[in-house]
Every structure is written in structure tokens, then in C-alpha cells.
Length: 386
Ligand code: PMP
Ligand code: GLN
Image (cartoon, rainbow, N blue to C red):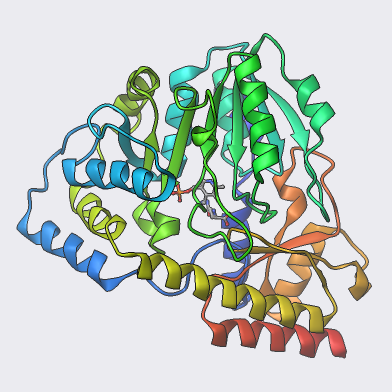
């Protein structure tokens, strides 16, 4: 048989699916893959259900249903003061995953350089490399996740087409601050580049921190592609509804990819999310507060188990150093071990680096009911106190 695509063949099954399968096999509490254990607002699901029954259920407009396009534009104004034209500057995608792919496919040519900051969400590199673009990796590392400014400056050049920025950042929980964002905006402008801004955790930013889209910085309005995910904002990860906001010229390029990738997105689900985006401030405040309480609960519990728990300012992930527990093995082995022996699953932080990532950190997800988090901590305590 002739071979399949060489680049994709290099990659195994994603760490999220792998760890979830292992968790299931061992009946383990899955704090690996980032997915809430309670479905998002019933009101959103009711609007979608009504539209599913009442129709129409045929192909909607390629950019998205007008209700959702307008809701995304208004959301940008309401939270970030951005003026966005719903007809020429928004497209609805199949999750942030398609949004990322459409931005990469729409903008990149073979040989273009793309600056990325590790740790990386797993879909970025395979797609960028598949296109033939060249990743320039710069890393932030636990425990402080500090931005290495000199290395970043060195990674940019005249060949740089694009920066990929994930803030709040998975899995580090880092929320890029004003100074860091201004620095990155300066580089993007200096090298006449674009920025793909993965902001799926925009509403998961905790006390003392603020999410500021790179798009709001001077010179960035027409260079940024700002990506959101209803899966994260409304705890409906299975729906795979994403949205891109970008200037009309960029949107034209993105649409060339979107039309061939998915073309359109289920209209009933779009209507449900349009309804959700218009929720009052109460929804967003309660959502963030509950997640913050769960973060604090899990962090305190894991500290009692003996982990060194790093601070998380955004996302629904906690990074923990397991070296105080005296385990003899790397992060992947530790995740397998606690799944099999303690009945709790995490994902290895090293998996978010292309190579030679940190080897004694793991990521626990806290978007779970307090009772489940409590049980997970109890299991870990029972195991490690023996
Ligand atoms: N980017 C990051 C950083 C993520 O954590 C996720 C979560 N899966 C995605 C993109 C993809 O989001 P979606 O499920 O909307 O495709
Ligand atoms: N974004 C989620 C995570 O980081 C899950 C993504 C996935 O399963 N593909 O865990």
C-alpha cells in the first residue's frame, strides 16, 4: 500500500483521547481531557432544540446565521470595546479547531515562518507543518512561565508571516499581561506579520487578572484573527461552535479555507449559542466564579496530597509538580500510574512541547463538580499516604 501523509503519520493519537480511553478502561476519574461534567445552560439547549425541530435545517449562510454573527460582533464590543461588522468580519466555524485550521490554511504558504510559544495546544503544529510552513518555537516553562523576550525577538524575521498566541494559555494557565502583549504586538507590527489569537478561555480568567485581546493593541486591529469557542464559554464542548473575528481582508482569505473545510455549521446550534452570547453579566460572573472556586478546591486538595501546585490565572487547568511524591518516572508514566493505581487521570505537561518538554509536571482539569473533585483528591490521598 502506498504511504499516507508523511507529516501526519508522525503523530500518534492525541494525548486527550489517549488519556480519556485509559481513564475509561480503569474506571478512573478523568481530570485529563478538558471537558466539564455538567452540560451548559438549559436555555441555550432549549433554543437549539426548538430550532432543530422547527427548522430550517438546511445549509445556512457560509459565514454563519445572522443572529450569531451579530451576537459575536456585540460580544466583541461589550467585553473589549471592539467595533466589528457582523457581515464582513465574523465567521462561525466547527469549533476553535476549525477556526485555527482555516486561519493557517487561508494565510500560510510553504516556507512561511510561524512563531509559536510552547506549551502548545496539540492541533497547531501538525496543520502548520502539513501546509509546509516553518514553525519557530519559543518556550515558556514551569514554574514561572516567563516570556523569553530575547528569544522571541530572535525568532522573528522578515520571513515571519504569523504569530500564534494562546492566552489564557493551555495548559499553563498563564494570562499574558499588558506588558507582554504590548511587546508581542510590537514584534508583529515591526515584522509586518499577522497574529492568530486563540482566546478560547477568554471567560475563564480569575481574580486579579484580565483578558485583553491582542487585537485591541495599537496597530493590531487589522493583523489579528481572534478566535473564540462556545464549547468553553458555555460548557458545551461537544457542540464544536467556534468564531473568528478578523478584518475583511483577512476574512476573505480565511473564507477560502472555511468554504472547503466545512462550508457551514449546524444552524440550530448556532441559534442556541447566539442566545447564550447575549446573556447578562450574571451568567459570565457566575461561570467564572464557580470555576475559580473549583480551582481553589482542587489546588488545596492536591497540595494536601503532596503536589507542588502552580498558580493558575486562567483556563480550567492546574499544573502540578509531582516530584515531592517521590515517583520514579516521567510525566507520561506518572499519568498512567495514577490512572491505574489511584483511579485519577491527568495529562502530562511534556506532551504540549514538541520535544524535551518538562518531565515532572502534569495537568489536572478542574471543570468538574465539587463532589467529583473531592473524590479525586480522596483517592489520591489514599494512594499516596500508604
Ligand atoms: N485551543 C485551545 C487552547 C484549546 O484548549 C482547545 C480545546 N479543545 C481548542 C483550541 C479547541 O476548541 P474547540 O473544542 O472549540 O475546537
Ligand atoms: N482542549 C481540551 C484540552 O486541552 C480538549 C481538547 C481535545 O480533547 N481535543 O484538554
